[in-house]
Amino acid sequence: MKTRKTVLGIIIAAAFAVGFMACSQVMSPEEGSVTVQLPGSAGGRAYTEAEKSTFTYTVTLTGPGGRTSKAEAAAGRTVTIGGLAAGLWTVEVRALNIDMIPLAYGSDTVTVTAGNSRALVKMGDIIYSLSQLKGAISDAKSGDTLYIGNDIEIDVPLEILKNLTFSSLGDYTLSRGSAHSNELFQIGSNTVTFKAEGANTLTLDGTNPNPGTQKPLITVNPAGVLILDKGSVLQNNENRGSINNGGAVFCKDGTVVVSGGIIRDNRDLTKGMGGGLYLVNSDFTMTAGEIYGNTASNGGSGSGGGICIENNTSAGAVRTVTVSGGSIYNNETSGGGGGLYYLGNSVGSSENKMILSGGLIYGNFASTGQGGGLCIVNADFTMSGGAVYRNEALLGGGVFAQNGDIFTMAGGHICSNEALAVSSAGGGLYIDNFTNAITTGARNAEIKQNISDNVEKSATGGDFSGIAIGGVNGENDICSMHY
Image: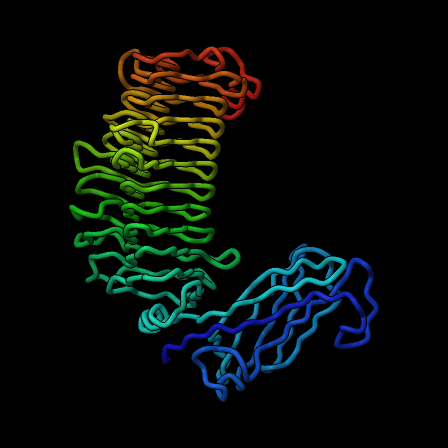
C-alpha cells in the first residue's frame, strides 16, 4: 500500500427543525438530528480528486445508553440521521476505498440539545505497516492524528519532530523488532500524544526478554512533551543501557504527562534508575492511569521502582511533580522510592516541589532503602489528598522526606505501611531536616496503623498537631475503613 496523507474536514450540524431532515419526520423536544456533509471533490491533501470520488463513507453515531445509528454514502453527499435522543453523541467517520479497506478515520462529539451545534471531524491516515508509518510521520503536518490499524514491528528509532497524536482503532501493538536495541520513538522539542479510540488500546511493547536492549521505549529530548492518554500502554521493556535510563521512558529537560496511560512490567537493570520512567530536570504530572510492576535495580542499589526524577537544575529553574489521580503500585527498587523517587536541587528546595493531591500509591517496595511509597529529597512536599498505603522500606515505609524547606500535610492518608528497620524508622512517615512542618487545618489528614511507628521526626521544625496520628480518628477515617 502506498503511503498517503489524508486530512478531510467534515462539518457536522445538529438540527432540530423538521425541514432539515432528509425525510418527513416529527420529533419530540427531546430528539434531534445530526447532519454530516461528506467530502466530495474538494478537500484532502494527498489523494487525487479521482481517487477521492471513489471513496465510500460510513458514519456511525453512538449516544446515550450505548444507542447507535449508522449510515453510508458516497463522497460529496449529505447524510442526515434523525430521531436522536438529547445528550452527547460520538460521531465516527471512515473513508473506504473501492476494496472497502478503511483509509482514513475521524471522530468528534456533538451535544444534541435544543438549538443548533457544529463540530468538525478531522480525518487522518489509518496506518497498517512500518513503511506506511514512516511515510505518514514524514508527510504529516503539526497537529495531525495518525490512526494505527494493525500490529506493527518497529526495527529503527522513529524520530518525531512535530506535534502528533498516535491513536489506535483496535487493540494494536507497536513492538520492538528482535534485532532492534534502541528506542521505538525519539521525541524532539514538540508534543506527542499516545492514545486509543473508545475502549481500545495502543501498546508499545519491548518484547522482553531481549538481552540486547539498550534504550527505553521512548526518549523525550529537551523542550519535548510526552502525553500518555487513555488507552496507551508501555510494557515489557528491559533497559540494559548505561545512558538514557528508564525502563519505558527517558525524558531530559522536558515534560511527561500521564493522563490515563499504563506503564507496566518494565525494568532498568544497569544503573537502576526508574523502572518505569526516568526524568532529568523535567516536570511530571499524573492525573489518571496506572504505573505498576516496574523494577529499578542494578543488584545492590537503585532509585524509583516506578518513577525516578532527578532535578538538579541551576538556581531559579522551578520543577514540579504533581500527582492528582491514578495509581502507582507494586513497583520495586533496591534503593530509594519504591513507587516514586524525587531528588531535587541542592541549591534550594523551594525550587523543587512535589504535590500529592489525589491518587493511590500502594504495594511498592524499597528493599534496602528509604520511602516504600515515596522518597523525596531536597524538595518541598505538599499532601492534600490521595492515599499512601501498604508500602515497605527500610526507613519511611510510606513516605521518606529529607532536606526540604516546607512539609505540608493538609489532607490525605498514610496507612498500613511498614518500615523494616528495628526501631524509630517511621513506618508511615520519616521526615528529616525540614525547616518547617505545616499541618494547620489538616482535619482530613491521617497517619495511622503503620509499623513500627507512624511518624519519625528528626531535625524538623513545626509539629503534627493537626493530623490524626495513631489511634485518633480523623474527620474522614479512610485508614480504618479501607486499608
